[in-house]
Image (tube, helix red, strand yellow):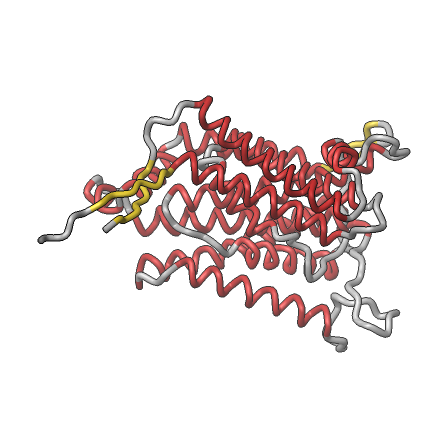
Length: 368
């Protein structure tokens, strides 16, 4: 009787890994090319526009770069935040909910204080509100996991849907209490923030470098140093390797878990605040699925901070490039851009699986 088993590879060279990933990318390009050709679109031209994020022939190239960075910042921060909890083997799947929580609380501060305080103060308070509110969710899920051995995957997953329905309720309910909506519109529409609550940036010619980009890169540096060169980072690694070993070494597992997951969720909430402040409003799709994509980025990067920065940028180029390329063709819409992103990510994940595992067939003889 033949049986098949998955065995983890331990001897794959760097060149073989690159070959697997290259095969995955080529396969996704070919499959996407078939779809494009069936719609009467030149695949090479589409891929050129995608790779250059629509800069070729664009009269406003600075706007394309700004759009790319607005996707890059929340994805980078969310991926870094998830890597913190994943290193401790705490499977935080609640990025979407934590992101929405941060955006909502940042919006509350924007609407309530945006007309009465200076801009930098309002932005700072928005970030603090988002950081703390999302961090509380992380604290509660970590507390339940350590004290009552709950399944953090299910708990954080449920939080995603709770917060999604909350922001949908806010966005669809016209009422006197609902200050999130425009008062001059008959149908429910989210209002714009006061000018003081909209994040500014550094003007470089026609290009506006948002402060959130600089802060996101600084966060990446801090996370790298935190995990590699601090006592706290060492404790996270020990708890992730073995809870029993951590306890034997005198490490307070409860405190380390709660602290790390609080920081993980709080950082995602901060990403929500940055997105809301740079957009000047919130919406029901404000996350752009960053909570799910961040899981993929962190996993593909093997939780390495420098690699997360690179992969986050490449995924952002893929996302924005697909949107920019799709805008040039009447045959397709933004849904096709989502399809292309799915094809690329699935092919890369399949290549990653092939890099780490192999299928082995074993046989057994029945007794005569």
